[in-house]
Each structure stands twice: as C-alpha cells, then as structure tokens.
Amino acid sequence: MRNRLPRRVRVLGLLVVALVATPVVSLLCRVPWSRMPSLLTEQVVTDALLLSLLSSVLAAFVAVTVGIPVALLLSRMEGVLASVTRALIMLPMVLPPVVGGAALLFAFGRKGTLGSTLEEVTGLVLPYSLGGVVLANAFVALPFVVLTIEGSLRSLDPRFELAAASLGANEFKTTVRVVLPMVRGSLVAAGFLAWARALGEFGATITFAGNIPGKTQTLPLAVFVAMETDQEAALAMSVVLILISLGVLLTMRERWWPAR
Amino acid sequence: MPTRYKSSESTWRRFYVVLALCCCLLFSGCLNSERVFTVFVASSMTEFIELMLPELETQYPDLQVRVNIAGSGTLVNQITEGAAADVVLLAGANHMDRLQSANRFQPPVPIARNSLTVVVSSDIGGEATTISDLEDEGLQGAICADGAPCGALALAFSKASDLDLSNATREPNVKAVLSKVLRGEVDYGFVYRSDARLAGDQLATINPQGLDLFITSYSLALADSDEVSLSFLELLTKPEAGQILEELGFLRP
Image 1 (cartoon, rainbow over the protein chains, first blue to last red):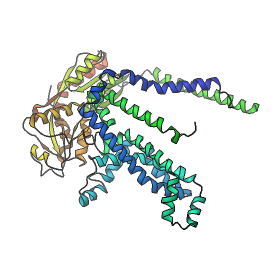
Image 2: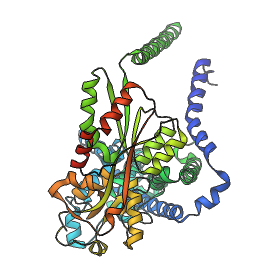
Image 3: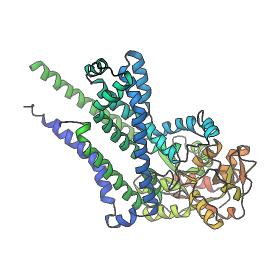
Image 4: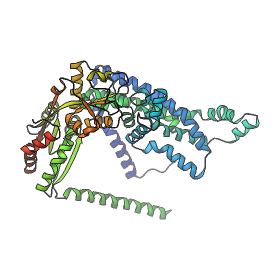
C-alpha cells in the first residue's frame, strides 16, 4: 500500500491536468459540429488528409528501417563515442523543426551539398515533392525510433546471442533471426511513435517540402493556411488530428507505458 | 524519520519563496512607467516602418516601441483572439474589414498601394522572359498563402490569365516567397513590386500585361486617438512618407 499523497500535491497535480485539458476543450467548444461533414469533404481537406496519412505511414517505415541499424550500432557502443553519436541522432528531437527543415534544405535542397548532385545524377528533386515530405517527417521521427529500439536492445539478455552463435548462426543470422525478433514489440512501438510524430509535423515540412495543395500540403499545413482564410475548416481539421492522436495514445498505452 | 520530513517541509518553503519572488518580478514589470507602443505591421511594409520609426522615437524618447510583423491575415487573427495593438497597418481591404467588424478600432486611413510582379531566379533569368515560360515542365513557383493579400492577388491573376499556379508552393508571407527565389530554391515567385525592388539586380522580373491591375491597398487603423497614435498617423501620411513609399516601390494611396 502506497503512502497517501499530501493534499497540496494532489490539488496542484489536478490543477495542472485541468490546465492542460483547457485548451483542447476550448478548441472543441468552437468547432461547428453541424457543419463538420461538409467541411471535412472539401477537396483541400480530403487531399491534405490523404497526403498526411500516406506520408506519415511512409515516413514511419523509413524511420524504422534506417533506425534499426543505428539502434543496433548504438546499443554496442560505450563511452564518449556512444554519447556523442547518441546526441547527434537525438538532435532533431530537440531542434526547432524549422531549423531541421532549413538544415535539410542545405543538404538535400536543389542548391544543397547532396541535393544538387542528386538532381544531376538521377534527376530527382526532393523539395516540393512527396519524397520531400517523407524525408522531413522521417528526419524528425528518427530520434524517437532509435531511442525506443535501443532501449529494448540494451535490456536484451546476451545469452540468447551466445546460444545462437554456439548453434552455428553467423553474425547476420543472429542479428536478423534472433535479436530483432526478440525486440519486435519495440519495433512496433517505435513505428507508431514515429507515425504519430510524423502526422503532426509542421515546421520541417513547410520549410523543406513547401506548401503545395494536393502535393505537399499535409493536414497541419492545411490547418495553418485555413486559420487565416476559413477558421471553421481549420477547426474541423484540428478535431481530426486530435482524434487520431488520442486514438494512437490509447491503443499504444500497453507498449509505451506497460502495466499501469 | 523525522529529519526527512523536516527537509521536505523546508523544500516547500523554498518553493513558496521562489514563487513569491517570481510574482514580484512579474508585477514590477507591469509597474514600469515607460509607455509601450505596439505596432502591428503587414510583412510587406517591414522596410517602410523601419524607416519611419526612428522619427517617432526621437519625438518620444521614453517610448518603447514593439513591432509585430506577420501576414495581414495572421495579424487580424491575433487581434481578434485578444492581442493588444495600438496601431495596425494592414494589406488588403478584406482583412481591414474583418478587423473593423470584430473590434473597436477607428476607421482606417489609406497609406499606400502596391502591385504584383514576378521575380525570376538568376539561374533561369535568361530563359524565362514571358509568363508562358513559367509553365515549363520542371519549374517550381512560389506564391503567398491564400490568407495573405499577395496570395489572393496572385490566384486572382492566375484565374484571369489562365496561368496554372496549382503547383506553386504557398508561403506564409511575401518575404518568404522572395527569400526562396533569392536562394534559388524556387524558380519564380509572385511578390510585390516593393519587394522586387529590395532584391535589386539579383533578380530579373517579368511583368505580364494586366498584372499591374492587381493591386492591394494598405491602411492604418488606430485603437485610440491618443497623442502617440495620432503622431504616428501623421508621420505616415505626410508628404515625405509618400516619397519614401515611392522610393521603396509602392504607389501612393
């Protein structure tokens, strides 16, 4: 039996919860519920919704795919090198997304260090395309993926790898057939976390991929534009984003904060 | 363990002391007698205001001027949601109407007008000389978002002249469009003449027939007719201001 909390802690805690809930509830109070169906079926909105779903799912897959080798690498590193590498990988998580988007432009933009070569060799232009949206989203989601997967890799019992090796499995087979299946729970959790982060991405997307309706205008960007032209549409789209986010948080509760 | 309880009590006491100190600091800021004058400015008027403000500051040395620059739609949203402004300089009659209908601002005074032009990145400056060249495969354009008057004008022009702008990126304000063209991230952009003038020789411009008919007008609204606000209005409407506006590429009201 836990100690009963002091009253001022309980009051303060509840007060903060109420304070966090207030903006969301206030937004919901302003939503023109009766007009929701017509607002949400406008071309701009459906385009943005579809694009958001497509790009965030793709970004989650990209982030998990490239995040796995990074997490494996980090889980075997020790000391200063590990700290520095981890800090570098975590950077997009704490960086303002706009800065991340600008950094992406300098690297993969048409004038960027890699982007100009990419355009010359393959003719591929990442900014102002779906690929650009996916890249920007994956960039900001990657730290969450690496953090999640590395955590469960580190808590893995090394005896399973020893057993696999003693039974004749080579390094590749041990990694792919033994280690990764054992952390598949965290792979799924990382994927959903990346997806949720990508769905709400704004700063990096508008800076790197621009804001072209039907092409790179995701739901958060459409909300931003609609705030100035059609506030009711902006509110309707916000409701969709809130519902999706809440849904993800509730479905993933077992994986992200187990046994509570 | 009694000693631990004691230390947790003193932690709470410390917490309250810090809280009280923070409150004192906050209120001392409010008690400061220096007059704050808040100016909301449409993004395309940035340079003009920066040129005019020093005169106001010499007139009122104790005045602390705060400038808030954004697209006109954003500015009106901020005010209708409770932001406090002493004077508001907006582009676009529709945004001024929104401000007037939602608030207790005084009737607007026209300050200037501005028309659109197309700036072309130096990379393709030689190749794109007419408006139809802009529809070439692979060219990327930029316009302002629909909420900003420069975006609404560009879309109106595209409708009137059958120019396809559906692939252009919608930037939050006109300065963002200009900087994207300057950095070569997009090939062309629809900006105001005053903004094109800022870029100088770095960018070529295209002026298709009829584009100069798409004009936005700027107007200033005061929250109160106090002395400082009236001086500001006078500063912006006197003949010298008109000259500065013309030098910057604006049209007189």
